[in-house]
Length: 245
Image 1 (cartoon, rainbow, N blue to C red):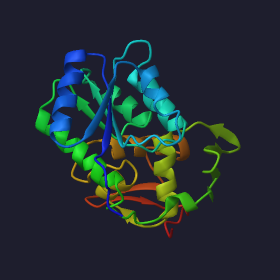
Image 2 (image 1 turned 30 degrees about the vertical axis):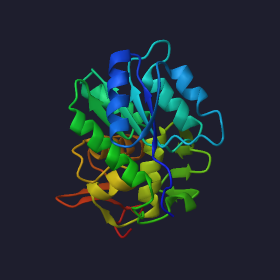
Image 3 (image 1 turned 180 degrees about the vertical axis):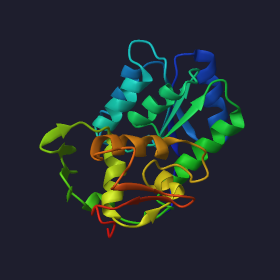
Image 4 (image 1 turned 90 degrees about the vertical axis):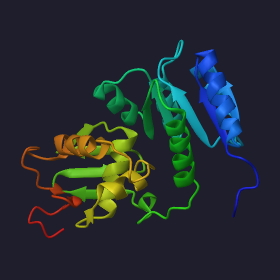
């Protein structure tokens, strides 16, 4: 079914002049835009079950409550809405933390307007349902391999009976692999189906998250048995140590 109203974008930015500039340009592109200056006000908009916000542009450095905390709260409440995080911080660990708490994309300040608008368009396009995932990963609730037990419905995992804590995106990536055992999965596919990003985006997120899964579940992360890299092709999850998948 096609939309009968413009996409509604929430801009969470405490720099008034920047918020006004983003709002002006988004509305010039035909989007409906709401701006707030802090995280608490942003979260209040999601307390209503019929909220019609389609995307959040979220500044990292906000008064009282950081963008990290806002993003984490939205994901913790079950909101799947695309989140584009803005920040003047350019360190890789800042971007990694943003992805950890559930951001879909990260854009460093200062940014070009055309890039912001392009990212907004791409995120809305991929969130609109125009792309069909390879598998319905939400159907998988339980998975076991080696000494690992994963309960996806409760977001719990154990290794040798010891509980480990995974972020929402680590769990989402693990679920995708467990839903596709033995199959070579490209980075493009992971970006589109796990992070809801265009597959053409340049990011190290899949590589970083693979290292984390290996750290959690591999006996020797340097010599992985289960989470394999297939050179020039992508990744492959092999739940059986003999490699048969």
